[in-house]
Length: 517
Ligand SMILES: NC(=O)C1=CN([C@@H]2O[C@H](COP(=O)(O)OP(=O)(O)OC[C@H]3O[C@@H](n4cnc5c(N)ncnc54)[C@H](OP(=O)(O)O)[C@@H]3O)[C@@H](O)[C@H]2O)[C@@H](O)CC1
Ligand SMILES: Nc1ncnc2c1ncn2[C@@H]1O[C@H](COP(=O)(O)OP(=O)(O)O)[C@@H](O)[C@H]1O
Image (cartoon, rainbow, N blue to C red):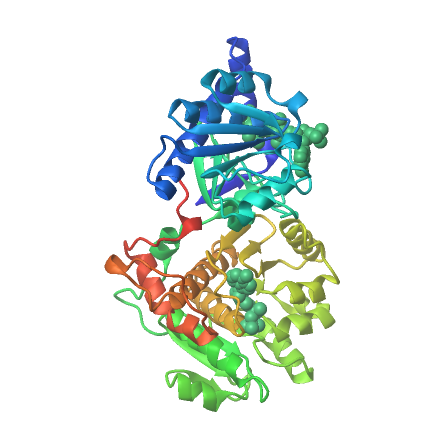
């Protein structure tokens, strides 16, 4: 499990180290440790991209604070390894003095940003030391102009601590900002490393001697895919179809029979056990998955350990009555798609729930549930909504979909980056609800919270999409090669078994966001 902390926790953990260094008469000792990590990983990136370090060119974009200090000290080390290093200072009179002196001593060039003009020299690698923990809002000009120009020229960016323009706590991505190929951070992951992971690229965590505090309520957590694989339910010696968990699905309509097929098929693929179906799409469901047991009504469905209600299921009086009936069964329930619209119009429905409920909105459905939310602060908006439900006595967990899917049960925020955006395709949400419902039926809810199965399902879902998009480009040793190709939700569905198998095994997945150390 990776844990990422809020800025105040990071500052508190760093304080004793900084104070000890200052007391020993070496106030930059911690900064130099951080800078050594930046230099090490920048050199590794140079080797990856250009085949060497000596003679390569590095541009440092340096702001007015300690983030710029890290970059300057790192530049001095890279100069010592034979790189041509040029620092561009966004505020020449406020740049970190001792860092600047170190770079000059090592033979690095220094100039003010105003002197760069419209012709920005194109280096092999650029280092973003504009702002880190203390950054607020978007990158400002003229630094923003240089970032834009080098990004357009395809120069890879190494972000020191955090990409500038990305908020450390909320993960808000302001425009303009740095989109990093590599982010080198220190001691503890910052929340933005998980909340805005696509902007961070590969994240390298450098040991600067900090002790990790226990995860507070504002920590963001993310499981390793191998951990998800390790806990995936498999049939035991004494299991039968019932003991592994039966999931019942109320989905589909005359208008949307496909939603039922996708959801039910995903539930079948995700676990063994048994899937029941209630709805008007029984013929299509049976044609796709003859092992599914169909029932005419919710009341007629036999026992189930969990329910999924909503994909393509309609929003009329029948649908509302069925949600009420399912919640009254007292089983863990996933409310997705149309069921969320019903809940938005009839919030009282959630009061019928006596067992854990998981709501799985996309951004538009979350709009309906909340009446409008602050899209710049996804984790904050999610936490406030869950807390508001709790204030009304409703203990629901919410999964907010997106490239980075967030899950919040009121105690913990989880973030799962799909690792690619191939999952953004119609019907893919129906597949997700099928997977998570099957996991809930298998008893994967920990202490009654559906958060963990939701996180596991999102992990498999994102990885299945990525594998599906690369299915024609598998190279030697199973590694994915090539750029991938568009997929539909059925392709994602078909990739679920292979994904579970890969996560359970030792196969290594070349997945940027997953390979953080
Ligand atoms: N603490 C530690 O122990 C260690 C810390 N370390 C390092 O220190 C970093 C934190 O350094 P820091 O506190 O000096 O702040 P930092 O992020 O450099 O900001 C500086 C100033 O920038 C400005 N600014 C704000 N927003 C802006 C924007 N959008 N665009 C342009 N400018 C903007 C704003 O000043 P303003 O211009 O608003 O007056 C702000 O005060 C941390 O991320 C890590 O890298 C490591 O060495 C390890 C040990
Ligand atoms: N940019 C993106 N990158 C990766 N995954 C995405 C992205 N946008 C959406 N997704 C995922 O795709 C799925 C879409 O769900 P949803 O919008 O409910 O689809 P549908 O209603 O068509 O089934 C969700 O699991 C979501 O997390």
